[in-house]
Image (tube, protein in one colour):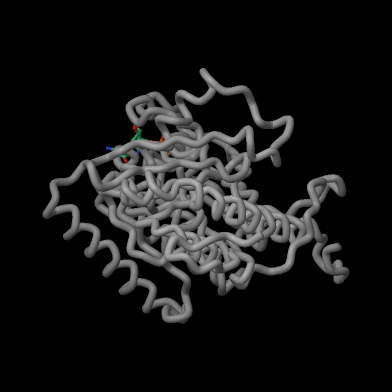
Length: 354
Ligand SMILES: Nc1nc2c(ncn2[C@@H]2O[C@H](COP(=O)(O)OP(=O)(O)O)[C@@H](O)[C@H]2O)c(=O)[nH]1
Ligand SMILES: [Mg+2]
């Protein structure tokens, strides 16, 4: 069986460049899984713990006022499309005491309300040390608490921070052109934090091009307007199709996932017992306007797909779309299984996954 395009041509989703699969459901049995470790740094009170609590523990932003200052490193393990581990460090952590070669990303948080006289020199020190350890490390700079500044001043300050960081980096012996450095303007009070985290996590997902290609084919075959593959708990999107991300659509999709996740436990029983039985997975749709609908499908235990679609297409072709969805879900599962089996191989183990 092959998925069907709504314009009539059958086109197997399997024709995407997805790698062949090893469907191994017991990957952790050997006790080894390579996680992607993210070092979270910044000055005291810059907002590090708040960010992690809001994104991964669904803490309401207003409750971050009561978070105690971190006095020791707190490790937060997240099982999303890939296993992640965040190391939330107090501001006085000594970098040489950490296993620096284990980190694939540094997330550095700068408080926008700050004078930057301490935060930027500290950032430059961190980048210098991390670059010496691993020149390919991803440096993600969250210029944070954007909500606290007025619109005009916010953009000006954001540019000023970027300029100062680049100026100071050119005075070091780092090859700035080869540095994997990204700036994000963030606030826990809006969806910028989710958008920025999505970009951070996507850079760590090795099979991302395959997931994106699956989404592109699914969108084209099913006449979807926009699609996001979300991590259901955090509402980070782990992949999206090639069409541009519009902030309003993203916000709408995030809110929909949040609303459904909040209500789901009241009405449905857990699918943990039989995670591969698609008949028990949830789905939901809502008509946003006469012309556009929003549709949600659970894809795996942790992932869900949220799409915008012309309402008439959804009403008239729902059967075909859900037929295509079967292949999409299968493709996603195969890609994740393969990635998981790669991650369960010990370093230096040359045997290919079975
Ligand atoms: N206005 C505003 N305040 C924030 C934001 N993020 C965190 N905060 C506040 O910053 C303070 C310090 O946060 P905390 O997470 O403890 O900082 P940490 O020391 O870097 O872990 C708290 O009072 C938070 O409410 C934000 O996006 N906007
Ligand atoms: Mg903290």
